[in-house]
Length: 404
Ligand SMILES: [Fe+2]
Ligand SMILES: [Fe+2]
Image (cartoon, rainbow, N blue to C red; front, side, top):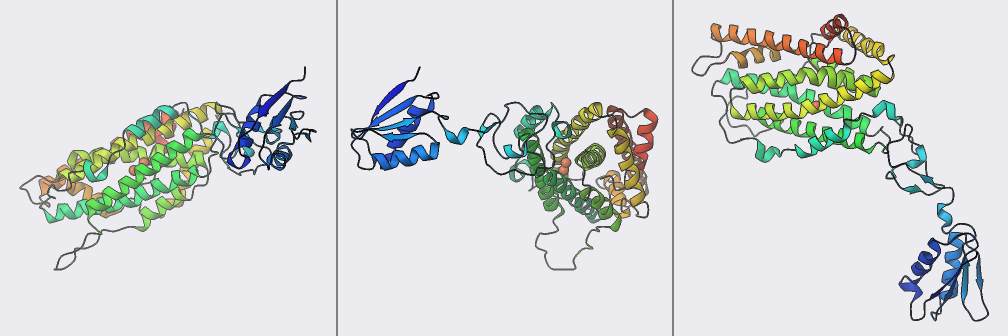
């Protein structure tokens, strides 16, 4: 049965939002229903005629000057042909959903967005919400979380070793920032949890770059006297990182970066936390390691789900390790300066000179243990992705000697 609703706008002004009352009255009316509007504003008729045109609603003016708007098409023409974005993540995100929030109705006729990562299976893990909440709660402030005023190591050789390691960390952290930042812009925003996680991971890396740069003191104003030898950034290190930054596939990039690279870095940061010669180095290593553990957890969870859904991904992951190994075969891998610096740091005993043979032997053994620990960690994570023990051992051995 046709309903007719009367809206009395006597005293209301059309240029002060009175048309909104008419739109509201039309909103829950069905096909054939009408809204009759009376009022005394001189612009009542032209305003409501324009509104009816915009809504695609029939419009008549009656003898007494009242306007009648029909709801014969749809209460809001803009909604006709719209797409409802599901509230839960869909298997495939439609290009027309664009930037719209889940649970909204996307008006017809809008633009299509070309987000390359629009399949749930390519980006999703059920761990996302938990990992994002953990990351949001664990953000730390570099200005206050690090005891910057604490003294540096008073042995010049050990201090130079710390600076070399920090410079090495900065370039690795920069690769770790660029990779999630690039994929963040490729994931369909329908999977907002993935965007949020990649964004907060990028912010983590921004902090790591900041604190390692600051601890290295490379950008600090220099006093008088000869400048110390600058730390080295090597061909081998940057070539290894370039192969990571250039990897175009999300699954392969997160495998190489998070599962293998950041996984190895977890061991390195814990090593630095343990052997740091000063409080600042210890604090930056410890805080970065906390963040890295989450990055590794996300990479693993995402790939665990993806390899379970698509077992053909596993040989692709293995092929990526082989291809990267072959591409880097002609490079030195970890630069000797970083290796030596780690030996000096781990072997240093207060009140002993840095180059003391006992200290060097201690440091050497500690670095061998570190490399073995990195290898064992990689093998554990590879087995979690379904590789056999033998496959995991072989793939771990082919991982870049640059660690990342
Ligand atoms: Fe990092
Ligand atoms: Fe990271």
